Amino acid sequence: MGFSTGAEQFYHGTRADLQVGDLIRVGFRSNYRDGIPMSWVYFSQTLEAAIWGAELATGEGRERIYVVEPTGEYVDDPNLTDKKYPGNPTKSYRSREPLRIVGEVTEWEAHTPERLQQMKDGLAALRAAGKGIVID
Image 1 (cartoon, one colour):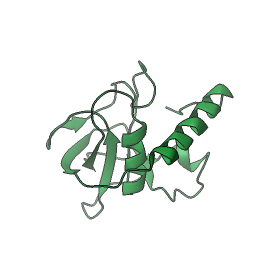
Image 2 (spheres, one colour):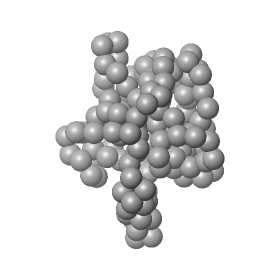
Image 3 (tube, rainbow, N blue to C red):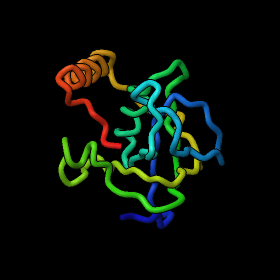
Image 4 (cartoon, one colour):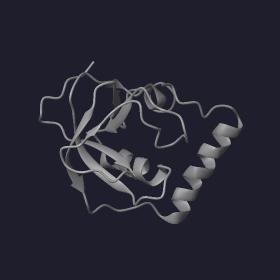
């Protein structure tokens, strides 16, 4: 389990329109699965993972990447570390405690439309094969 020391920088990609000081809490719908409330909040120490989070998030809002601060304990995200990237090279985490928004990354480079479509197609294939399950 981890605890923020304040020295790390963490990110959360989404389409939600939030402000500095707001809390991202459990119990709201997933960024990736319509209508399903999540019992964890997800975040990363890499901007790349947050970019994917923003680009793949459902909804109509614009893609946003927030700089966040965990308010409690957090653990490796088993959706990535156990299944796809052993050892957590994406530095992806989750927590049952809120994330406090401390800033927003306003300039970042999006993936090409072709690369984004490849990722969406790959995720759709996983779901179709019954392997697109989020461990919540």
